[in-house]
Length: 273
Image (tube, rainbow, N blue to C red; front, side):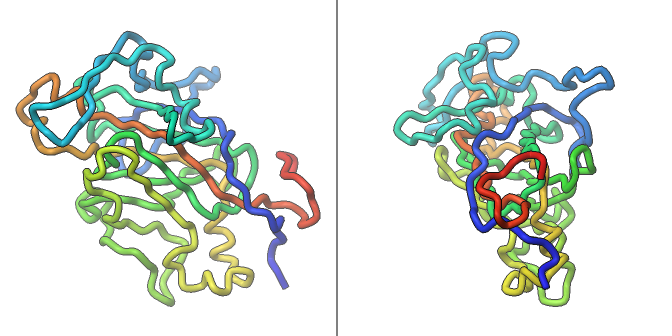
C-alpha cells in the first residue's frame, strides 16, 4: 500500500518567487532572510542595484575581455525563472569579485515553491562559468531548517568535508546529500548546465513507492542554491581591477521539475493541498 498518493503529472515550476542574498557563513545557509519586521536582510548582490557596476566577460584569452556596465534592473532575479530563450537570453547576475563576491562570502538564491512538492530534478543554466563549489538545499516544511540536498565541488573534501561520490551504496543512508566534482570545471565559459536528479544514485529508487525514506527525500517546499566559490584562471591573485571584474555569478535559467502532492484526481495543483 502506498504511503502517499501523488498526482501523475510532472511539470516544471517556472514561476517560483526567487530571493537573492549574500551570506558570510559556510556549509549551511542561514535559516531566515527577514528580520522580525519582515524587512529583507541582504546586501546588494545584483549587479547595478545600488550603482552602475562595470564587469568584463571571460573570453579565455587573458589579453582580450569584453567589458560592459550593469545598471539597475538589467539582470535582476526575476530573469531566473522567466521563459528561457537561448536566442534571446536574459539572466541574473551578481556583483563581481571586485566588489567582494568570493569565498567565504556566499550568494544565496531561494525559490519559494508555495507548497509541498516531490522534486524530480533541478536544472540550472549558467551564463557565467559554473562555480567551483556550490550547493543545493531544501526545506521540507515552510520556515523549517535548510537541509543539504546536493553539493558540487572540485574540492569536495576540503570544502564540504565529503568524499567525491556519485551514488549511495546499498544499505547506506539514502537520504543524505552527496558531493561530486562533475560540473566544477571553468569550461564552458557560458551556457554550462547542471542537472540534479533527486533519485539518481539512490539504490531504492527502483522501489520508490515502498520507500518512505526516499519519499521524504524528494519532498520540498523551498529550494536554495548557495554559490560558494567562483571558478577562476588563477589570475585574480595579482589584484588587477579588470580581472577581478571578470569574475561573477550569472544564471540564465533555473527550472524545477516536480510532482504536486495531491489526492491523485486533481486537475491542477493548488497551494491548499
